[in-house]
Length: 328
Ligand SMILES: [Ca+2]
Image (cartoon, rainbow, N blue to C red):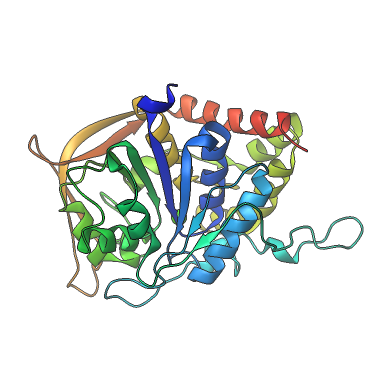
């Protein structure tokens, strides 16, 4: 892929189990074009998100992009987390795991040259001011607070930004309440602001993600075929996630939500889309975070309506092969 034509990527992330897989997927395919990771509150608190991004970069090996400290709370709502699903540390409680010698398998430490850039508001805003936004795609796999702040302070230009790809919203049933999908529920006011901004926006809603299921057997199988530090990490970090799906859906595995957003950014042709406008319920307490997706020709948002599942699974397999080849 031509570097100039394909542009640059920022991943705005809330540091959960599927975020880590999504980051590893992106780093396996386009590492030299990921210019930053941007942290946002969500699955866990912001400090834990930052710690998880450092650990994920270390697991990936090689050069790591800068990590931007984002905002630690929603615009107006109170903070929500999802530690029941993602583990207390957001990565399946892997920090408690011991290796054969009784040593901790995953240790938090700084990785070089990863740096954390701080900004009292949201360092994504500062970064965007200094960037050529016409070449920038932001992959949003957490609540949209950083993006809403960047719109609010005019550092993100709807006319200039190349694209925003967002994993979130639900057409029917939610996954955190009966009505709401988690990323929108965490900051519905931010989501509403972004959906109405006029930014070139591609949205992968929950019901499209849920067509994809990575079984525990497939994670184990790919790990055996392509052994690597990353393969071990993915299996370890998914353990509570898999338990959650077993208890709630009777299937051992998980929906790799955030990796699907990465796929939509890297291979948009893997999906079908329809133009739409999306509204977000911000007032009704019971339906807060509910999205209304209204398909119409003059809509400003491309909403995914189908995914080529075999192609997505091939992309995941390619990631395993990449890290096996590049394991050190
Ligand atoms: Ca996420």
